[in-house]
Structures are given as structure tokens and as C-alpha cells.
Length: 140
Image 1 (cartoon, rainbow, N blue to C red):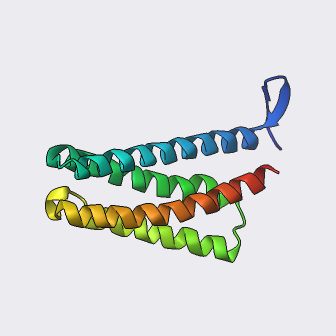
Image 2: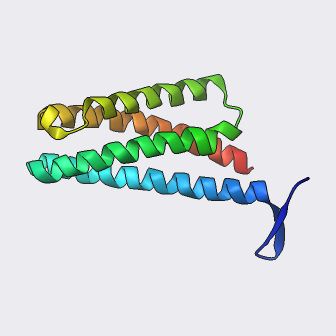
């Protein structure tokens, strides 16, 4: 038995409401991740090690949140094509590896972090494209 919820003058299923909230939450995770990526890059470029260390920690937390949200809130409900799954899986592994490697700036130098950050940004860019395609196809 499907529960319906009245929203904006039309009936929606509880599942529709859940998926809408999950997509919004996922989008917020993605925006927060991008924001920390840009801020961290600036702090590294401007040689602000204390700020960079704090932002690296926040970026890593946001990265893990984003990767988890994608898998558990969004992609779990989709049937992913093999090529899309391969990109998502590879980007998840790259993100987790970045997080594990750079838990703190003090464990690596700013140049090493900057180089790895550029690599993870390229990987995330590919993932964003796949996600956008999947989510727009789901809406149609």
C-alpha cells in the first residue's frame, strides 16, 4: 500500500517525497564539496597553512559525505549502465584514497596536497557529468 502526501495541489507518493529530499540533500552535499574544494585551493595557493589544514579537514569530511550520499540516497534506486557505474566506482575509490591519504595537511606538504587536489577535482568533474546525465534522465 502506497502512502500519498498532498504537496502543492497534487498528490505525491511518500517515495516521491523521499527521493526529492534525497536529491536535494545530495545536491547540497555536492555544492558544499565544491565550495570547500575552491576555498582549500585558494588557501594552499596563498600559503595559509593553518586555514588550509582546517579546510582540508572540512573538504575530506564533505567528500566522504558526498560519496556516501550518492551511493546510499541516489544511485541505490537507479539501474546504472555499466559505463556509468565504472566511472562512479572509480571516482569513489579515488575520493576515499584522497581522504585516507590527506587526513591532515601536516601529514603531507602543501605541494603534494595541491597536486592531489587537482587530480581529485578532475575525477570529480567526470563524476558530476555522469551524475547530471543520470539524474536528468531519471526526471524524464
